[in-house]
Length: 116
Image (cartoon, rainbow, N blue to C red; front, top):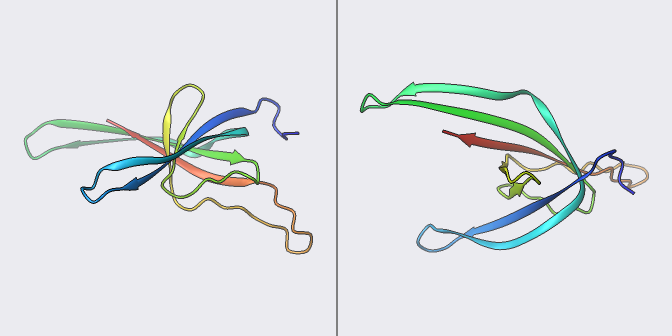
């Protein structure tokens, strides 16, 4: 049983880099029973001028993924949400464990998407 009222199923993609620097998918699997939460300051816009006088605008979107304790989410994985949005795992996900009982409530991963 999932603790979320409206759980979602996400797709996780794991990559390796070959000798030419190209990324290749080595694993792709789904994780049911997840939820996402907006992080504070979840959307940030940054504007800048490039050296060729072109205007550039980037939007940083941050989410927090809450997944079951059995989820194998790692740093630098990509997470695809049900709507098709692709986020990158930002840092190492945390999987706290209760020190006396060994209970694991789940995995928490910080997600980041940069557009622009």
